[in-house]
Amino acid sequence: MPLGTLDRSAPTLFKQGPSPLSRLTLYSALALFLMVADARFHLTEPLRKAVSTALYPLQWLMLQPVEFADKGAGYFQSLQAAQQGMDDAQRTMAQMAVRAGEAEQLLRENAELRQLLALRERLTTEATAAQVIYDTADPYTRRVMVDRGQLAGVEPGSPVMDASGVLGQVTRVFPMLSEVTLLIDRDQAIPVLNLRTGARSVAYGDPVAGHGGGMELRFTPGNADVQEGDLLTTSGVDGLYPAGLPVARVLRVERRADSAFARIYCAPVAQMYGARHVMVLKPVVADLPPRPEPAPAAPKRGGRK
Image (tube, rainbow, N blue to C red; front, side, top):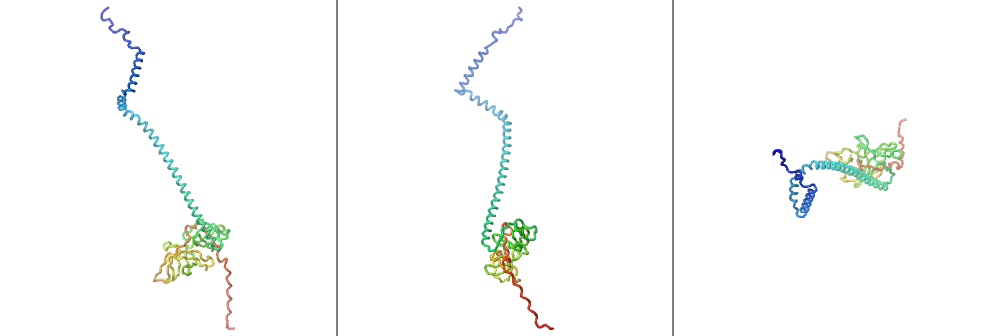
């Protein structure tokens, strides 16, 4: 056999190495030894720390998309929940505000009704309770409409007052409604009495806000004894208003040297713009005795035949 044809490799018997079972046993024993050694002597702890430190940036970078998606979903959910909570809170606050306003209005109306009941007990004339329903559409007058008319026995000229004092006078009557002209209307006048001095006068409506108050005592002498704060009541001489009803208080007195009359401005004691519950009184003229017949004219004397 030629020398070049000789196979110099090792036989197959020597190439096999350890058997799989031997390798499994060896690796298992090595793993068990390492686990026991690590549990007892913490041999691999520095290695784990080094590996975790080296892999932390990569781990953090890979977790960012997941965390961003979770945080974004949580943000939108919390934003929606906060918006819903804010809407519910605003709705609740609005309902509470409405209920508080209704409760306050009911308390105010209850107080007004109690005052009207007390006033009705003090009045000696027949009175009918009414409610102001709206103001008239004419901007140049001061009139309101009440929910009592002819069917309730309301008559033209009937005095109208609230719990504080005289409010006005019925000027027109309809079957179910009545028109009340307020004291501050420019065409309204009422005889009054100064409680402090006993002097009688006539108060006229003066709706001009610059004059103050809304009423004025006209044709009062400049030397008349009138002071700020004097209370004016109905005198009862007109046959419509009962005597002694509060009308107004003197607000300002202007005396001028170039005029024989003083300018006296008064503020009504009744709520001209806020009254809701009122009393319609029966005119006093219905309770007065009839006026006597005028005396017949005396015949003329000494006429030529």
